[in-house]
Amino acid sequence: MVSMNNTISLYLADIESVSDQYQLVLDCTFDHLRYLNLPQPLLKIVHNQYGKPDFINDNIHFNLSHSANKWICAISQYLVGVDIEKKRECRKDLIAKRFFHFHESQFLKENDYQAFFDVWCAKESVVKCQGSGIFDDFSLFSVIDDHQIIDNFQGMSLYPLKIADLYAGYLCSQVPSTLRILEIPKEDLDQSIISVTK
Amino acid sequence: MLDTLKHIIEEITGRKNITLETDFIKDLELSSFDIVNIISAVEDKYDLTISTRDIWNIHQVKDAINYLHDHGINE
Image: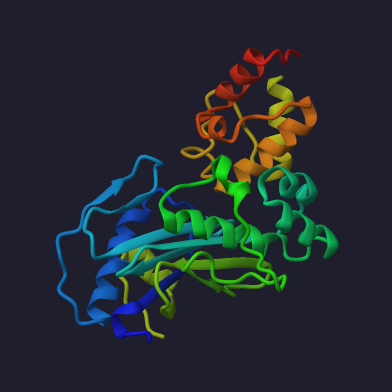
């Protein structure tokens, strides 16, 4: 059962630099809270021991990803991780062998690495949701299940994101959720005011 | 060695004007995948494995060069 409070707001934008992204995160968060008719607390961003930024508040969380000129911000009442990647040429065989679980690496090899970026994004969204990062244990878990598909992982919910052509993306949530996806118009970015609509 | 790293970084990210002080996150705003991509290319080039934990202690280009020197790689 997915309640209203399990809504995750995903804000998409085209940006050239992420240097001022935290003001945008605050604007997105206030939009999310307004949408859910929730009170707007005093928000403070802190970094955990792995460098992952999040609100110090226990009942509101965010996670960020960017690739090329695409930026995405996920806001949720629960722990959340998001990753997007622009698909590009790279040494997929080397990276899969070095950083992926054996099952993932084998699966990709047998499928000519077609789902390479999907697997990467799913894995990174999982560790971002867990609050850690890409460490030695990154290659010790697999997001590919026995049916050879990317599926929910250890009780966390995984959602594929289709944000644009040539991009892969995955969202990982602590709980099953409803996704609310919004694009931030460029004029709003310039003013740092969020007035997004579905 | 700087020229080799500059070549790898430019090939992967398209970014030029790389110096010893260039910071992968602060200056180039690279994603985790970009960094993993660069590390894989460096490992392939120099035939070594950089411990995954050590990857995140390499902030600037000069840190990568120092790491390689400390692990017996010289050019």
